[in-house]
Image 1 (spheres, rainbow, N blue to C red):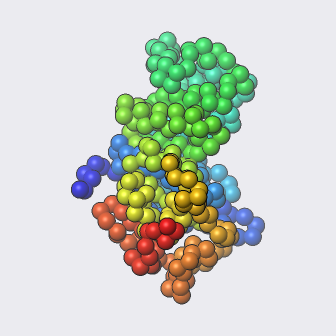
Image 2 (image 1 turned 90 degrees about the vertical axis):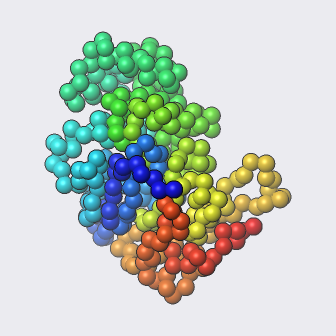
Length: 331
């Protein structure tokens, strides 16, 4: 069935490189995808694949990261062509970020309440009693007492800081939210709680859509409507979560899934498989499938960069041999 919801985010052929003395690190290299209204898109891949660089490109380009080319339309507007002032007006209201490291997002010298007030007033919102009633409602949603507003960041646990940042990042009800590795520093129970709360925010209409970035496919399987897999700065595969998990077509996607433990399956019955080798150096890297150096199916054709091909409705893959290889090679 075709999904008729409008696209809230449209990215076409986006390139963003780190410009260093030795050349260009092609961390985001010709990426194209959409995010629909009301959708949670999960973005997964190994460390260094370009996930967080993609988030930085959408939120705040800072040297040595530089936008090279491509189009990024948020709510129909190309944010790559906006002035800094124009884009700043969209921050928190139209697009917002829950950063990877919650502690780094706070000012250590300000209490939480002062930090929130200063932040929203920069966006023309009066931080009065009515506003903080809304803040209290949101704190209740994540099981935090109003008293946390009178504390300094150092007085909060890691899980509490992450929940406070979730409240701050969504307090102006953004249309699009990027959650960048927000569970990586948390214990398992806190990871599940934070991920579930993000889905609840979507269901309650607090956020419109979200891109949830992580290396952990098991978390995305719980909350994401679709999954997109990146490898070495490029797109591998995208599709509905259930279909992509049950019928992955890119060799890298299959390798990622094969490395995950399954509930009720013991090691003696089915082994876990790692991915041999290491990701390529993205400094001045040339053409070709970037996974070919580790792929058991690579041939001469893989020296050329594969195009996106349609597998099923909404399911696309970038691999020359996706239709030749099975999905159960490690069984």
